[in-house]
Amino acid sequence: MGLAGQPLEILKRIPFFAQLAPAELEALAEAVVVARYRKNQVLFVEGEPSHSLYFICRGRVKVYRVSPDGREQILHLLGDGDPISVVPFFDGDPYPANAEVLTDSEIAFIRFEDFERIARANPGILLQMLRVLARRLRRAQEEIASLALKSVAGRMAARLLELAERQGELVDDGIQIDLKLSRQELGHLIGASRETVTRVLHQFQREDAISIDGSRIVIRKPLILQSWSEQ
Image 1 (cartoon, helix red, strand yellow):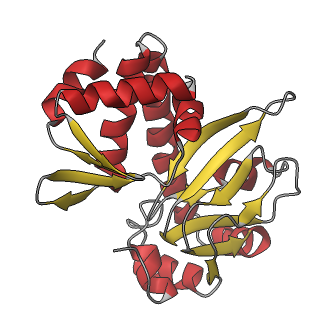
Image 2 (cartoon, one colour):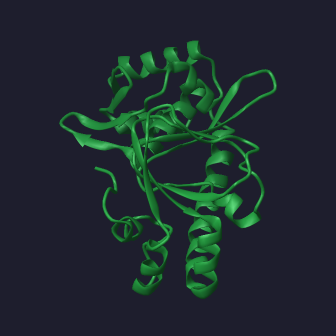
């Protein structure tokens, strides 16, 4: 459904800001700009001077890096309500990765200088951001440690379950996720080849754990995927 609407309503539904006091939300809302982006449009590139904190109102964004030999590594798949470029806000360094829009999207942003001015007058904003950031960091560390010990099928199952939890939509026969990713990009996401990804997905289909229609995957039997995710 997305978070389309006025800046104040958007901020209320973004985890980084949802617990802020009304006055703090109103102060931030004055600096929020909402823009529309087309599929495949680039928000920023690695090494570019950072300038804004982005939040997805509606749509999908991938954050990735490119190795010296041209291989792409997807770091994050982000959806409605997710922040982008949080780290540069705190350290002032250039963007550490690339961000590309996967679907036509609406994305809100606040320029760093405006954010800093408002945060200095409302320190509760920074405290809330730090709490949320700490929770996200803890979860990321747990996921990295867990994924490092899994098989390719285990990593794929775990990633599908994570995406279903964060971005899934209930449909008649399960939970649907619209990845907007090629098999090659899925491989980049879990550190596997396109051929291996295809083989694993076919295995999940044979077990009726999932069904696939183009870029849409419906998780039909999450308990089967959960079993795979532990391997």
